[in-house]
Length: 76
Image 1 (cartoon, rainbow, N blue to C red):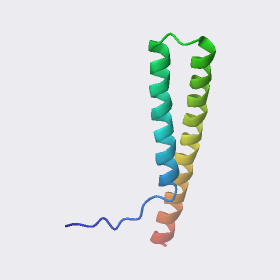
Image 2 (cartoon, rainbow, N blue to C red; image 1 turned 30 degrees about the vertical axis):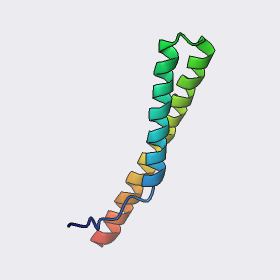
Image 3 (cartoon, rainbow, N blue to C red; image 1 turned 90 degrees about the vertical axis):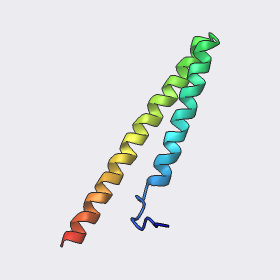
Image 4 (cartoon, rainbow, N blue to C red; image 1 turned 45 degrees about the vertical axis):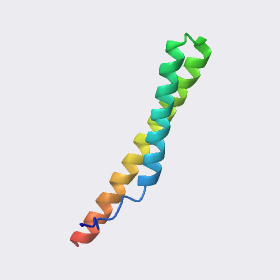
């Protein structure tokens, strides 16, 4: 048995939650398209997806900054 002792990224839980929500909304959008849902419904889902993807990008960028700071501290 091997244990992974590398620390998980600080924001990993938030990143995972955002990715899960994006996947769920993508599925809802595909279903809405296949059922010929009203345009306002698909538009609303698309806007939610856009917003979540933007937030995910910002959170991932923050995680990268945290990682860089951690690495620079360990090098000193």
